[in-house]
Length: 242
Image (tube, rainbow, N blue to C red; front, side, top):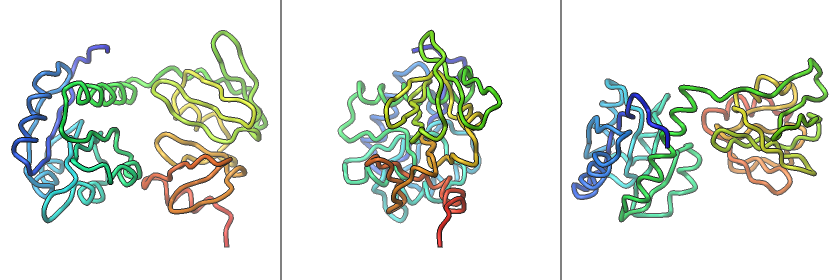
């Protein structure tokens, strides 16, 4: 993992003092993280997030008065979030809130480090976007993308969806899945907005290929794709519905 010049500023939120201490110790053992503060309630955390720059939030779910998920609902521009909880039952809702990772207690350092490295990679990709190799020939019917050492023609109409995976994107058609070194922002800029819409931080879909929308989930060829809260308004505005 590449070193970062400025460690990620972390806020830990948990009403269990022992769990709080464990996460703090894990942060102290990780060179690219710095402990910016701890809170024993979501209410206290909301105030810290309002007044201090926080890059990464380690957040418990089950807390009195306000749960961790309730806190996320109040944040317009949340930092990167790693949920730490004793229950697996919140995984689906966590995904809807676009949390970065979901760590189940008891916490091991190995699992903590895996989640923290994911946060670092995401932070660095946002700060230093990957090269944008998708080359548009000025045509609204197709583009060429670089796959390994080749330029591959992609017909926009055949694309089902695009999925982000680290520094790469997967362009999925009915016949193939192309792995391209690119950013989702580059895809949004090169793919025609008349045909494609971003539904999630990690997904762009072809409007023509949507078969069903159910419980804020888009279904394309049996692939269930979540609609992130940030994108819901635009998605439903773009749909031709009555």
